[in-house]
Length: 338
Image (tube, rainbow, N blue to C red; front, side, top):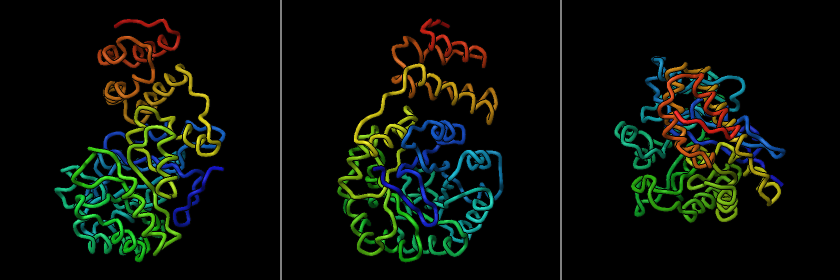
C-alpha cells in the first residue's frame, strides 16, 4: 500500500515531492510533472525555484515568473532564502497571498550566490537564527512552514540531532534533509545514515512531524531504499526528475505494488518533451521557449534513443514550427536532419 504523507494541515496523495532546483523547476516544468500520473498517482507536492524575499517584494519580472503558479499547479511550496526574519516574514505573507500552500525556508542550498547572502546552507552555521526565522514565520502565516536542510556544514559539524528538533519546537511542520553536507555540495554519495539520524531525532522529540529524504534518487528503487533504510516519511526528487519527469508516476506504482509499471513508450516520452515546449510557449514566449528546450534536450535525449543527432539538431532549430515538425518526425521514426 502506498504510504501517505501529511504536512501540517495539508494531506498529500503520495509521499513524493519535486525539489526546488534553480533554473529548472519552473511552472512550465512543474505542470509537465503533475500531468504524468498512473493508477497510484504521481508527484504530490512541487516547489518553486528559490525565491529571494527582497525580489518578490519588489515584484520584478524575474521574481514574478519564478513564483508564478496557477490552479493546476497545486498544492505548491514557495521556498524562500535569506537571513533577515522581518523581510522573510513580509515575503511569506506575499507568498501566501499569491497561492502558496506551504512556505519553506531553504537552509540547504550550497550555491555561492545564495550562501554569500548568508542564506541557504549558511544558516546551518547559525542555528539559533534559523530557529528564530521559522518561529517568526509560523506566527506570521497560516499555512504550514517547513525547512529544507543538509546534514551540516561539514562532516565534523553535523546538526542532524540538534537543529531539526529545535525547528520542531517552534512549529516547523516538516523537515526535508538532503543527505550531504554543505562542503560536499553535490559530490560523493548521499548519506542514508545521516538522514536516519534526523529521522530518529524527530521521532524522539516530535514524532508527528515528518522527515522527507532527498538526494541521489534516480529510479523508483532508490526511493524505496531511502524510505526503508532511513524511515523517512517521503522523498523529494530533484535532478533525477529533470531527465525523466515520469519518475514520480513510476515510483508511486513501485511503492504501492512492489513492481515497476509498464514504461512509457518512446512516443509518449517524446510527447512529454512536446508538452514541456508548449507550456514554455504559453508562459514564456517563443524566444525563451526555444532557448530553454535547446538546453533541456540534452537531459531528455538519453530517454528518447535511438535518435542520432538529436541534441545537435535541436540546437540549430530556429522556429516553433520546425521544432514541432522535427519532434513529430521522431515519433514517426522518419528522422529528419537539419
